[in-house]
Image 1: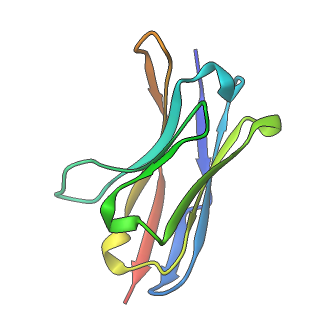
Image 2 (image 1 turned 45 degrees about the vertical axis):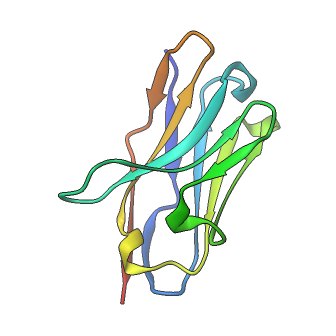
Length: 116
């Protein structure tokens, strides 16, 4: 069973920054892709950013230029650096991992709150 543990959420003022971390219980090279999605109250789940095993990254339009996804292979950890945060970024952020056989895992989430 794969475990993904998120950390780094919190409360910040608009324009501020946060860095989320997602620690995996096994080598992140065993995953085809890892990423972050978020869900705000009353809204649909939204993919935020992803990074493939080969290093390609993708971002949702609302966060392009503000968020950066990266990884530290030796620590089996994926990061999400969030800059220029806006109140509409407020949500629970979840880490997600997928493997080549279509299996998927998610963490328990970390709350990000951006005040205006």
